[in-house]
Image: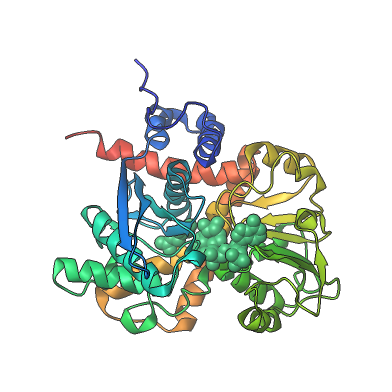
Amino acid sequence: MKSEPLSYLPSGDQGPWGIYLEQVERVTPYLGKLKYWVDTLKRPKRILIVDVPIHLDDGTVVHFEGYRVQHNTSRGPAKGGVRYHQDVTLSEVMALAAWMSIKNAAVGLPYGGGKGGIRLDPRQLSPSELERVTRRFTSEIGILIGPKKDIPAPDVGTGQREMAWMMDTYSMNVGSTTPGVVTGKPIAIGGSLGRQDATGNGVFFTAAAAAEKIGLPIEGSRVVIQGFGNVGNAAARAFYDHGAKIVAIADVTGAIYNEEGIDPYDLIRYVAESETRGVRGYPKAEPLPAAELFAVPCEFLVPAALERVITEQNAHKVQTKIVVEGANGPTTPAADDILAERGVVVVPDVLANAGGVTVSYFEWVQDFNSYFWTEEEINQNLERVLREAFEAVWQVAQDRKVLLRTAAYIVAATRILEARALRGLYP
Ligand SMILES: NC(=O)C1=CN([C@@H]2O[C@H](COP(=O)(O)OP(=O)(O)OC[C@H]3O[C@@H](n4cnc5c(N)ncnc54)[C@H](OP(=O)(O)O)[C@@H]3O)[C@@H](O)[C@H]2O)C=CC1
Ligand SMILES: O=C(O)CCC(=O)C(=O)O
């Protein structure tokens, strides 16, 4: 007998969940006897859809739809961020949760995968409205989360501020201060040094590891980055600090180009002071049509915004040696094949952006022990963990003659399904 298809998504869903399922199909032939358990990966363990009503500042009531998905908990508690964006859907949060299961297993962190999100545009809400949304959402998903059950963290549209509100709301509800319920918190309430830039630093460490394999120097190389938020911004600084030239950057406001290189520190100051709060209009670079960003010649292309931006429509225009996926799910399976045919190395999201959750893990361990490490210890351990994970995946890719993404899935799916098999199905 076959497992029933999921009834709550249209069959043949072409959204992020459909992409994830295709990635699972691609790894299945390499799982040997563990194939027996593979349906585990194709079905989220738990999904909670919540209504989040708040009073707006003008006194009216508005309702938002929020989600928390626990994709898998075979290797430990669910772990993954919370997204605030106007396009959040259940399919997207399911895929993001599943990618967390794969990522945590690929890097060897003792976690399953989870993700949350609320469909709202944070730019349309005041700070006090965002605080009310965050606190209500935290209370609504309070039946799922907890330091040993499911640990949220920042993702698109959320950061330290939202994590502080989540930690405080959960703590009020359970009656004791519980720092370990979320990571990515401000340092003053149990956050970790190094978490803020960890994802971007990890993008750089894995890019450097891939570059070494193909004999590409970082110094003097050209970098193109889509997204100048938490991940894109920190990745830009890491590449720049190591002598690379950031030749093009884009955010929602537009794209900019300077073949001599853009100083990300100067750009951060510009963005903070500009009317648009974006990169558009930066006087030391030329405007670039956003659709041309991925065609800019470079050695490293870093998508660090949203999913499905490198597709079969534009993959043949990409002019880079290495794509380093700062974002989750930026490349579709069809685009993966086109890039592979063209000899472009893709460092998959589940390795390239794993720096964030790795330092989240360090934060969680520090919170349990109430003993905090130095920034140097954090960064050294981060680089070691990512380099070891990259090396193991690279080796599998060589041995099995598969793409790095499939190799990462072989490592991760094997670990998840071994845990599933050892634990069995009972009770
Ligand atoms: N934060 C983290 O620790 C981690 C994040 N990730 C992933 O990294 C990606 C980025 O997350 P994060 O940096 O945290 O999010 P942020 O909200 O901090 O930043 C997102 C950035 O993407 C830009 N952006 C959004 N849409 C577009 C678009 N269509 N074209 C160009 N730029 C766009 C935004 O522009 P604007 O500012 O103008 O709105 C912003 O600069 C996501 O895929 C996320 O899942 C992965 C691992 C960990
Ligand atoms: O830090 C974390 O726990 C998760 C970060 C995240 O959401 C991600 O890696 O996509």
